[in-house]
Image (cartoon, rainbow, N blue to C red):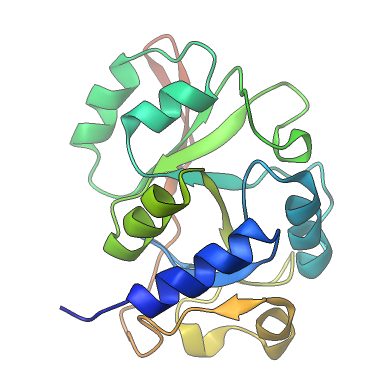
Amino acid sequence: MVSFENDIEQCLMVLKDGGLILYPTDTVWGIGCDATNAGAVEKIYALKKRPDEKAMIVLVADEREVLKYVAAPDLQVFDYLQEAKKPTTVIYEGAIGLADNLVAKDGSIAIRICNEDFCRHLIKRFRKPIVSTSANISGESPAKLFTEISNEIKKGADYIVNYRQDDDTIAKPSSVIKWNNGMVEIIRP
């Protein structure tokens, strides 16, 4: 197994200081920060040149963390996620404990339980959720490979993870659904 311990240590220092990381996720490469730090979230909006009313995704390591950051999730959503064929982000009502500028105007938040080794280790060690938004300027296509990430984005990150930079597997964004009392609304297939 490839070791990513040094990357984890560097990311933890940057995240604790309110900085930005450029890192591989279970989908595309992402720009990340502490999802509870409004100042760090603002840095991502500025780097991406993205209006702050456009919501971003939050990554967590397991179901317990969803319960910690969502007021009253319908537990049936976890059964749905067990059956999902690809990484799936769920828009939940009633976000709590996250940076205000990360939560949508209606109080909802998009959360994905991440199943990628590096991300799971990082989130568990950080003990907080991490923002994940595609590593591109708003309006441009998301980078499918590390080599496609623009220099502008790379320069804006406080730390760039080395792990998986040479991975040539074409990445795809997650599915996005809105869960409403057992009814699934597909936002992005």
